[in-house]
Image (cartoon, rainbow over all chains, first blue to last red; front, side):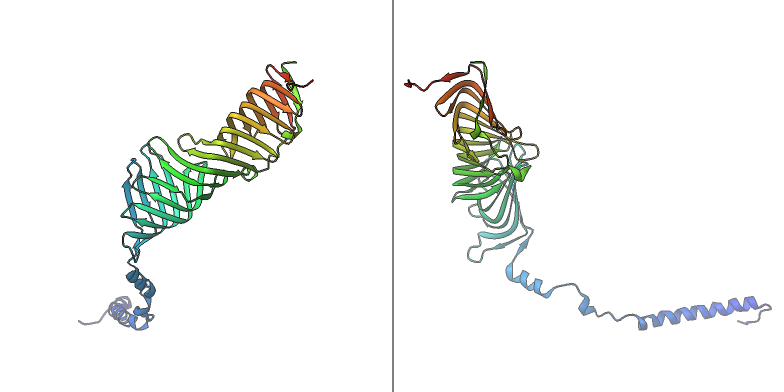
Length: 202
Length: 142
């Protein structure tokens, strides 16, 4: 191809037509030489410690159990972790659990606790570590230990109860949370003592 | 005696801030109507005032806390100087008023007054008795 042009402009275009692609090729081929060094082995986001722990503990994360109790109460129990107890596989150690008991008239009671032992054989759970029972807007109860019977849809503390309620501190011989079709009741019996301090409220 | 008698009961002034201790054999809090009911040897004590009854129902305030206590069943109100008994009583926290109703018998030292209704203003200790107010002389006195 003969490069003879009578004006400079065409010559310029012709040169550019050849030089620019070559420059582009040069750039492309050398770009990898100047790019930052990325060490692939370091940047992979996984934690050595987590993997070992998961393998050793056979932990279930975000477990979720649901069931219907004999009195028609729907029970939904969710937790952060559940892991079978070493000596008795029927019992699951659960942490940060949240239980919703919904009665047939669609009223619900929420129970939260830091820890629990859920026995799937007897469908019972012993829960502890700031147990909080929210039954209705004006009334809640916190205590340290509670036994739940998931088969019957009831919760109770029978070996002496001590807790704080919306109305104040309470001690009693026993406490029972009963979910019936038309009413949900929290009952305290045996030497019930409640201390209400008005100034805290208003 | 007039149908309405004003009596001053210095024992029945209550400090609104004082904590209220409630004792009973049983406390039931039911979700349907939000009611809380104390049953069996119920004693409500605030300061040096004690109200005992067979049954006390708690009514909540909108903002939370107790609005009213309604006691029934051999209600007895005891303070260091006076005692009053009636069939039922309502302790209104916000109005700071205690209203006793039905066969009210107020004993103040040696004097006893009976009426249908006794209203005690817990702020001033002043009380008003209404309805067939009669002085009951202690029997057997000269």
